[in-house]
Image (cartoon, rainbow, N blue to C red; front, side, top):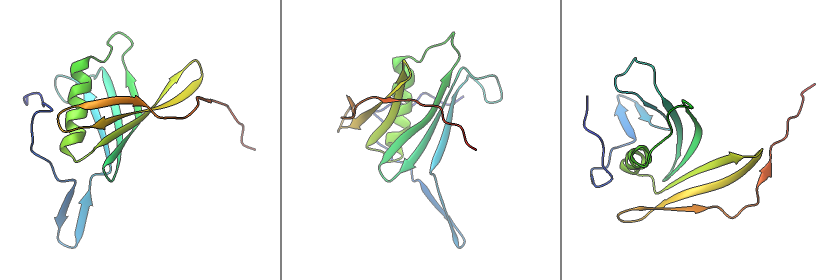
Length: 127
């Protein structure tokens, strides 16, 4: 298994690879927390990249296992190595959605709520 990633690592990974007349660009990443690939995982995070920003499109975890500070540090370290300077996500609580973000600085990440009022979630029917 590979060694854990640290935010101290300065190597930046390319999000684009050219093969023949095609450029392959990383736009979406699925991260799973598991000891060995193929085994049942305890958490999953979906990231969507747009320029130097990343939006956490989805997050689920086993209710028995919460995310730790080390888990967040690993996730932030990975997206920073791919050139991200901001991570945006929505937090849902009591049927309300509130936007938040982490901003990258030279040696750390700063957490902050995005200035917006909570949005109530509403179910609509089609047809």
